[in-house]
Image 1 (spheres, one colour):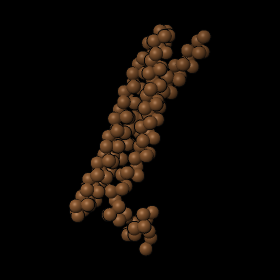
Image 2: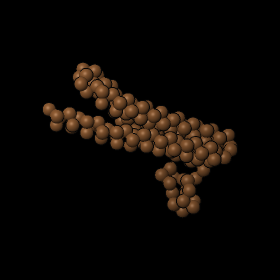
Image 3: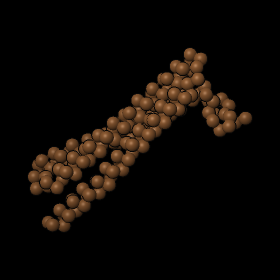
Image 4: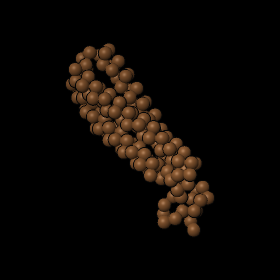
Length: 147
């Protein structure tokens, strides 16, 4: 029989129900990296807003881009934070249910699935922001060419 990293046996390619509650916790470091990088990029928009304030000629075309990017980052962060919460609750609920002698597979799998949907939602927002950032770069290049 194959063994998992925890020394438990695996059957039919599925993880032993006793360790299923650990699965959402394994996803948290990746989500944490997404949260940290997204928060850092969101902070950079604050600096860009200050740049626009000190260079009013850039203000008109840039304000709309910055505002849309702010909303996309906010939406992405909310989705990622929701994923963290769902993964934590999935592990707690699955572990508690199992500790009480019940079968916590359905709640762990359901909440983990919702957490993955939340990650995908956040990633879609980040992709949209990256595409919008290309428009900002184009505006900067156009400004440089006019000089």
